[in-house]
Picture 1 (tube, rainbow, N blue to C red):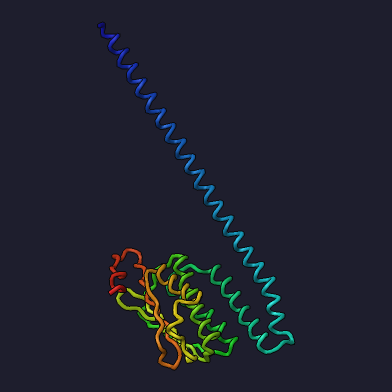
Picture 2: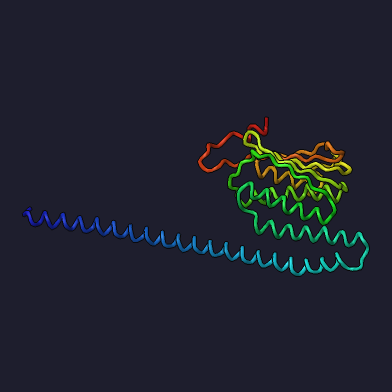
Length: 250
């Protein structure tokens, strides 16, 4: 075969290979563009859902909250006004915690304390908050922060509504990568046979499990009930993970 035929054959083969590479690159670019468009669409959908959720919460607060406020301060029986104030506090707590349930552990604990102080102050219930200085400050996922909020809120609600407590102590500490929170009241106590049977305590247990921890109800040192929550502390950025779940189970 003459030499120019060999060169032409090699050039033709090279052109075929190059065309194949270009075609694959074009298809890859199309796939990437489709993925980017899908991701953008998903992000827009998420933002739209969040915006709509915020609007619903604002409407709830402004509409139902306004009516509850009128009921709480109107000329009604004392127990009706007290119940309206209680429900209004619950509504405000749900709205505020859902809007701001993100941040570091210490930030979330500070928000929980602020909410509980305001809520209990309107009920005439004393709050004693004791927090150890060694509690670390890792960033919390939003879902974990919401679980902590709602466990704390349910514990307080049980103490006030069902136990008739006048004094609640919340202690926060950390040990061996575990966050410990206990809620102790001076109320009537919580019957052991009812633990986990009602919706509130059952949800508290499920939320503790979602946090890979556990929760217990014991007789309180002040005559009422002591709720003890133990959950793993998320490792700070760059720190090694620890075998906390095995520690809880032991």
